[in-house]
Amino acid sequence: MTDLTPPPLDPAARRMRDRVCIVTGAASGIGRAIARLLARHGAMVVVADLGVAVIEGGAPTAEVIAAEGGRAEFVRTDVADGAQVEALVAHTVERHGRLDVLVNNACIRHARPLLELDEADWQRVLDVNLGGVFRCCRAAVRRMVAQAPATPGGEVRGRIVNLSSQHGIIAAPGDLAYGTSKAGIAYLTRQVAADYAAQGIVCNAVAPGKIQTGAGGRAVDPDVLARAHRRTPWPRLGHPDDVARAVLFLASDEATFLTGAELLVDGGWIAA
Picture 1 (tube, rainbow, N blue to C red):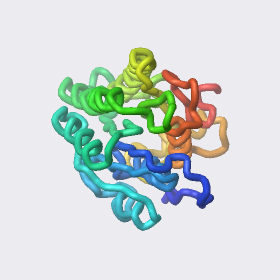
Picture 2 (picture 1 turned 45 degrees about the vertical axis):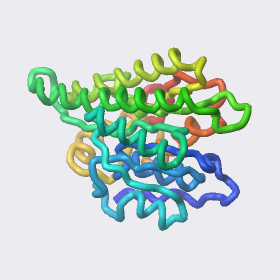
Picture 3 (picture 1 turned 90 degrees about the vertical axis):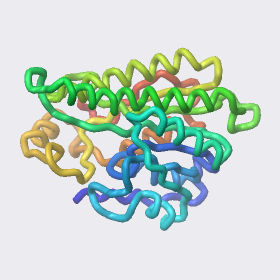
Picture 4 (picture 1 turned 60 degrees about the vertical axis):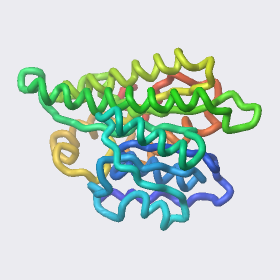
């Protein structure tokens, strides 16, 4: 089992102090690591997912964050449902006063090549992965443009970090819908960044490579793992916290004059 425990944190290192963040798909895996790290840096984290069950095992994310001394709440949300997304953002703003950061992590997979992919499954993957990012960005930006910057005299009214993928850049073997959805997320990120920069909205993406989350199935298929090791120059595969650290940077005030970018966290896969 992959160790998903974040490394020790210097109590003085609070890069997200009092920021209000939504992380979708935060019950398990990468989203869970992101939510925990943001909370450990002082953020109030709204954990948005279909349920609280943890794929890799353990207590629900919001409970773990509370046990680590952070602040979090769970809001059941299906990102494929526009009404639920609007309710999530409205609840967050009404309860916590604002929305500083949205992390769009929720996604599904249905690995099939073109000739084996039913139209309903194609549509479902696009609706959750790409449509979910669209709905969440729309609801969040609507609120963000109407609020003052979190820092007095600051430039930024809100930050969005979308989870794309290396497989939005290169082919995902036998996984057409997933790769297409992730490529769309990269484009959507650039478009939102360009359209709303003048209104103080920052929008970037993180593109993970092969990340070992503790999930089973295709994620631990020997052939998939062997290919990932062959293609990854770094002498190990990725961990959820590798992605979480990149998200933390883009969500924090340390990321300045930086919008519309896609940050690869892939151990050099694309470079090789």
